[in-house]
Amino acid sequence: MKELSFLMFMVGLFFGLTVLCRRLTNPNHPDRAAFFIPSRMMFNLLWGSMFYIGYGLLMFPDFWLRVGLSLLEIILLGYTLVMNDLRKKLLSSHIPPSRFAKKIFDHAIKKQQELDKNNKNYSRRKAAKILGLAAYDLETDELQKKRIAALETAAQNGQIGHEYLPEIIKRVRQALQN
Image: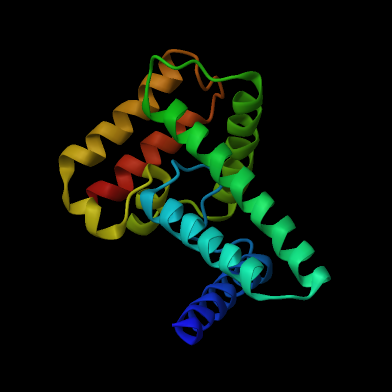
């Protein structure tokens, strides 16, 4: 059982490093989205990574390796909590975002605007990522409509006051209609 857990730890670590390298080497990929609703799949990967890093903390006796894994665990936990908070604030119209959340939304939308200068049209995959859905969830029109309505409500209520958000919503709709 120890060997299987260690193998899963190594696979998770390799997967995380691969994703990080891909993001660093190809920052202008057409399907990259800076502004998005965090998805369930993302949370599953984060919680799974935290679980196996915790396992690594228990298994490795080296002090400095444990310190490094602890720092990584703390960073992932903080990132997960922030993403969960942002998801709640994007999907529910009755929770007002904090100043910190508004700064994150504004920064993400500005970055999305820069990405959109290079890539004019959204693909279905990019639209799904922005809506926080998996590719197989795109077949469900009801879920798409709920997510788009949540973004429109956030734009109309002033939860996200950036002027580029309606353009993002328009591009998502166009990608989903194609």
